[in-house]
Image (cartoon, rainbow, N blue to C red; front, top):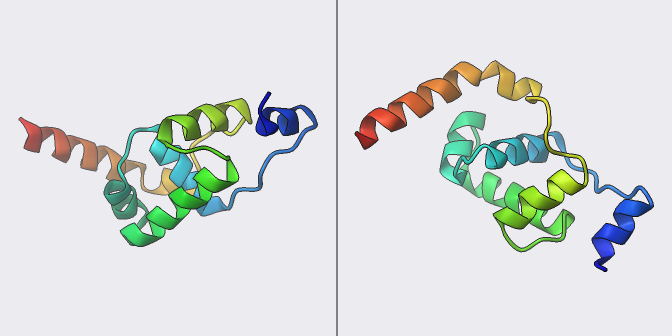
Length: 103
């Protein structure tokens, strides 16, 4: 059995920063790093760092593992973070614009 599942049984859950939670939320909603950076008004390098920190803290190797482990540890499903709520309209505009460009 993996170490993480053993830690989960004893109630261990890694501490995620607010920005890491926002990034996790957007990753779970299929946004790419560049898109997340635009939505959160951060650089792509910062989002890369948040993603790397999430992978390390949740002890996984890729995005699929990240989402699976976040779900196992109770981080997902999650309520929309407040800062994301503030830009929800921007997210919808981004999605509409992206769809119209793909057509």
